[in-house]
Length: 154
Image (cartoon, rainbow, N blue to C red; front, side):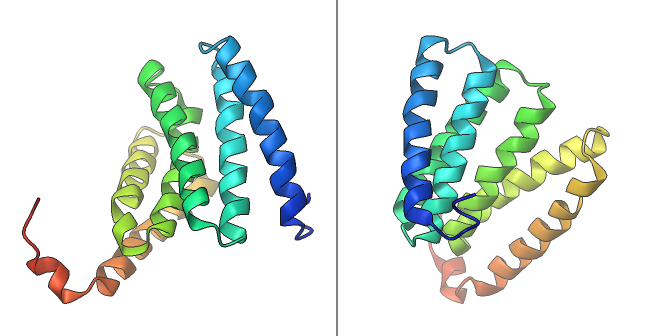
């Protein structure tokens, strides 16, 4: 609500308070997938607020925390469709925040969505995300400076 109203300072305070609560709950019972999901949601909201405030490093850190939790959840529950779909949120956000260097995140999100789609586990309203990511990857490729192709592989 506060984000929608443009009150990012109040939203940030509220989400930081929520983060502290969710971290305590998640530490109390790390096997509770619901609390882990709650922790990812708060980190994603923090990332959105930080991004809106122009605090890119903080936004990246929040989305990275959410992604790490999703990675843990999907490792423990590989067939958890909700966790797989939800993991694309921080992946896409990180892809956007890193610009041309974020293509790896977008490719990973695309692979997850395509895998779910091929398995019949992706809702029709989420399918446009596949096209959007493909278009964004093409745009990033065009934005890449030509000398980037000449750099030695690491």
